[in-house]
Structure formats: structure tokens, C-alpha cells
Image 1 (spheres, rainbow, N blue to C red):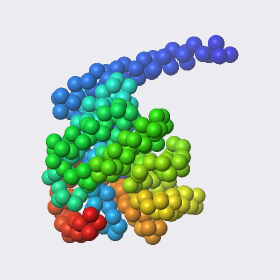
Image 2: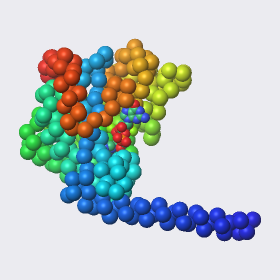
Image 3: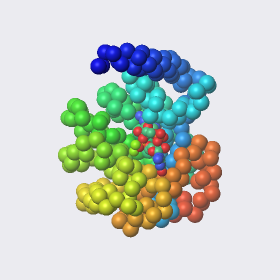
Image 4: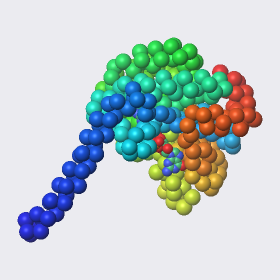
Length: 287
Ligand code: C2E
Ligand code: MG
Ligand code: MG
Ligand code: MG
């Protein structure tokens, strides 16, 4: 049966596959020049300490493609990874994010996502040290976000890398926690400052008792280990209230602030001088 009706199916399947491959190949080719053509840029999404202190921003990469328009990282980062471009792009992201952070009040942090290729390159700690030195930013203002997928291989080297970054004063977050394997040994063996709960568990927090139990347990577990917790993808006041009530340390999501370009981000900071002032006082006390 597969053969008789399989032909037509196979042809359509192949054609759309081919189209996808062509699109991917086109993107791959134009991605090679995107960096030098200034088509990559960062948006910044606020990180809020409840109830309303802005403590920093997460840098999120975007590609302004001349024909296609704005492309999200989920689409082009896998291509960049496969094409060996992510090391160079990633370096640019760290430097650009640090330079932007220098235009903000000095208490505010900037968080940068690392791709597996960057983390496993072996030169990450040197690169990061060089950049913060060249830009002239305090290491404490930079936070690096990694996902568990990064940690799956080469465990001894990984611990070395994270410890070196830690000694430099750079903060490390475990991103998208709760997806992947969520192996507890990571929490025991790696020096994380922050654990970011994936938005998957935040989305139905108001109605799903299982999500509530999981999020509550993650918060307690992290706090027991001296790790701070950020909730990602907070979209409603109900979610925010629930998380604040459970002592979540930091909230991020469209309810609290959308990702914004460099200039609107400075406006965002300017428009909340009281919040920023309070954040500054708090971080001065913490240092
Ligand atoms: P992530 O690090 O977990 O970043 C959070 C993602 O959730 C962002 O998507 C953000 O725009 C989105 N988000 C934030 N608040 C909400 C909300 O309230 N609701 C919903 N539905 N979504 C929200 P984005 O910008 O598309 O980035 C996707 C992923 O791409 C990031 O996930 C991160 O893993 C990766 N990424 C972004 N920038 C970089 C980068 O510079 N380097 C690397 N290696 N990866 C990056
Ligand atoms: Mg992230
Ligand atoms: Mg995340
Ligand atoms: Mg995510």
C-alpha cells in the first residue's frame, strides 16, 4: 500500500523538503556575511527582582535579514552552529552586550547565552577575560547562561571552565531548567549562581497543580543549595503573584518587559529611575 499511494506523497514530501533545504542553504550563505554587514543585533529583556526592581537584562540575538526580515535565534543559531560560525558570532554577542551594559547604571547586569560550540571551544575563558578587559566592565556585571546540553560531554573540562569563570567573578546561570535531563548532579558539581526555570512550567502555573508542585520544589531545592531562581516567560500578573509568593528571586517575561533594542532599553531604564536606584543600593550592599 505504501507503494501505490506513496508516490504522490513522496513527490510532495521531496519538493517541500527541497524548498526547506534551499531556504536553509540561502540562510546559511547570507549568515556568513551577516556579521560584517551589521545585520545582527541584540535586544535586551529586563530581569526584575520582585516586586519591581530592574536588576539587569538578558541579551537576545536577532538577525535583520535584508529580504526575509527579522529572524529569531531559534531559526538561525542551529545553522550557525552547524556551519562553525557560532564561535565568532558568540564572541561578538559577548562584546556587544558588555559595551551596551557600560551605557547603563553600573549596578545593572547583562546576561549572555552561550552556545555549546562556544562553551566547548576550549578558549571560552580566555575570550571572556579578554573581552571584559578590553571593554572595561566589571566581571560581576556579566552573567553567562548555559543549558544542560552544554554539560553533557567532557565533564572534567566543563567543571574547569565554569570554575575559572567563577573565579573571574562572572556569574553563571543554568538556563531552561526542567527541560532536558535536569540531572541533579549538575547542581551538585557545577558552581551555578542562578537557575532559570523554563517557561514550559510557568505557562500553566495558574491552573496546573503539577507545574505548581514542580516550580515550588525547584525553588526550594535551589535555595537549599544557595542558588538563586529566575522564572522565565512570565506572561500574567497571576503567574507573577504566585511566583513572588513562593519566594522566586527574579522574574522575566513579557508581563514584566518585552525584549527591546539598545536605545529603547536605555529609555526603559531612564523611565524607572527609582527602581534602578533601589537596585543600585541593593547591589552595593551585596558587594
Ligand atoms: P532563552 O535563553 O531561554 O531566552 C528566552 C526566550 O523566551 C527568548 O526567546 C525570549 O524572547 C522568550 N520570552 C521571554 N519572555 C517571554 C514570554 O513572556 N513569553 C514567551 N512566549 N516567550 C518569552 P528568543 O529571543 O527567541 O530566544 C530563543 C533562544 O535562543 C533563547 O532562549 C536562547 O537559548 C537562544 N539565544 C538567544 N540569543 C542567543 C545568543 O546570543 N547566543 C546563543 N548561543 N543563543 C541565544
Ligand atoms: Mg537565556
Ligand atoms: Mg531559557
Ligand atoms: Mg528557552
